[in-house]
Image 1 (tube, rainbow, N blue to C red):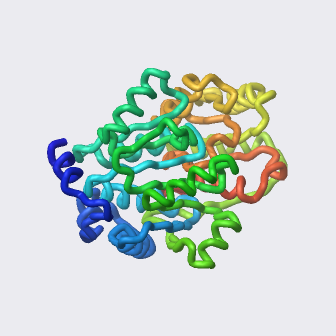
Image 2 (cartoon, rainbow, N blue to C red):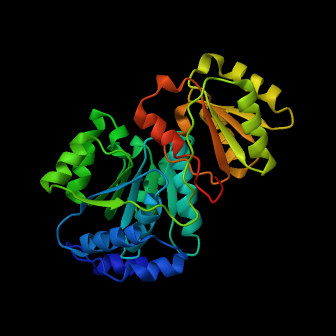
Image 3 (spheres, rainbow, N blue to C red):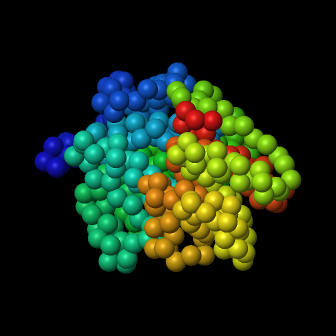
Length: 341
């Protein structure tokens, strides 16, 4: 805390990122990066050390390791005495990112906080006050971070996960961020507007084209609904102590679907999650599945953005013809995140 205060006292109006080798950070965090991740970090490190503001698009397929690149970049920024804001499209993803950042940075004297609808008004006020005083190093949240009452003492980097999922009303605030801090945008499916800006040179682009070590290719099959096939798939996954996603995007009869799944796997713990549930209840459902307390999660598409559960290797998507290609691509990225196919 005292070191951080001294750094902030001596820093000037210009950027003072130290341009230290990012490899020092990687070795401390014990990461095994791909060549594309290393190249992206080199480019980001140069951007952070330059006098002009960074506006970089980090494009990579689902599961390609974009979050790790953003985490290493964030650590370089907060070690230089600045704060980092991480903007995500969903509350569940904010919880996931908060857990990832807090776990990876637990050996450091830095504070990671999240701002979501899971918190009480009192908790939110306390976090906002701490953030304005500079006591929060990394603030993670949904569009709530874009509110006018959210202030930072020394914002250095804004990480925007899946920018295309934010509405038009949020775009102007995102533009404001680009004038006061460095901006790193993460996306698996960039929208034409973002790609156009990259082609014009308004923003730089880094691509992650290599899957991390131990990441297996996802086998995708399109078949008519078959109870026996689903039951066999569930039994196979549970036999190797894995977990299963069952995506059913209609809340009205999702409980009936869950009851049918329970009949197929009577020994499995089946839970249900969807966006119309009370926030606290949904939080407990998602966190329980992340911890491995449940075997099968029957849910809507709330799981499609960034949920990282390496132990979940099988997914069934009902009525796949009702989804867009981007949705299916994101959903498919929730499995195959570990060495098991």
